[in-house]
Amino acid sequence: MNKSFWTSCLSRVLLAACLLAPAVAWADPVQEFRARINAATAEHASAAEPVARIQDIVIPGLYGDIPLRLYDASAAQPAPAILYIHGAGWIGGSIASHDNIARKLANELSAMVISVDYRLAPEFPYPTALEETFVVLKWMASHAGVVGLDADRIAVAGDSAGGNLAAALALVTRDRKGPQLSAQVLINPALELDAYEEKAPCIGTAADQAEFVDMMKFFTGLYVSPDYPYALTYVSPLKTKDLNGLPPALVVTGGLDLLCPEGEAYVTRLKEAGVTAELLRVDDAGHYGVAWAAADPSVAPALNATKAFLRQVWGN
Image 1 (spheres, rainbow, N blue to C red):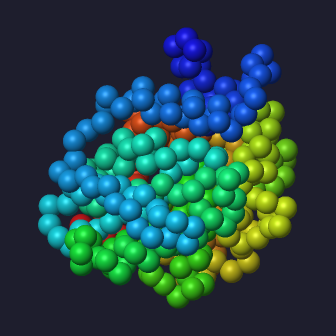
Image 2: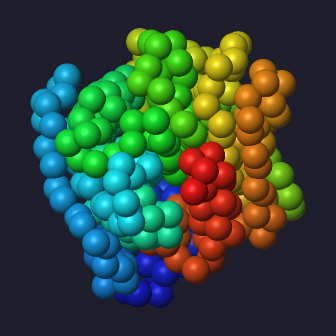
């Protein structure tokens, strides 16, 4: 794979062109997608910034052990904490792929970030990933004193598919009466997993619209089995009838991203339900994808908004 090809792939929505380009045929597109995510991870590994404390942890889960990585850059304990849920179409990504952004968030916020290696579709379709993140949240709340985090200041954050899971987790914690989240941060979230042919970017024309539609159908078809409808509350949070009682939310959208409308519609609905919600639309941005995971300079507006929002929520 030559560098110019890979670089052009990185500019596409979550590597969609690399995954779906007709000139290349793969026996297993899922494994190929994961391999390309791993290649991007290796390419950006050298940019990783140091964090005061990093610890790999394994906790028991419903489907087996769940690997976590704890990043602690807090100046004092108990520290505010973020449960970070990575993106990559529910079928790819890992703690390693989002290592840079986890480090950046921990350092910039002087906080603790716990990143989760949830099980991936299609081997483990919905609701596996969501239930695993809920287990991690309960573990964080019950082990707050052990790991040094503030159980009253736990936020959930995620990008793309991880944004979908973060929004769903906020709904789950409300419906199951805890643990309580202090905030939710959704970066380019996928919040309505059907009718992608009808979607359009918030600004301008999406050159990759056909590829985007194919990509989302591919991802969602692997994530959501036929046993569950796309309109299910925890599958498509935007379709939830009742959004009352959710934690304050920051939603970041890219004006050229075809997920932009559903993210912005979610902010509107949250506000209508009386939930504190903020929106940042980055007009000239598409889907952050690998750039967000690598904490590339292009995502500075989103990072700055995240920092300001969480500092306000946490009062620090």
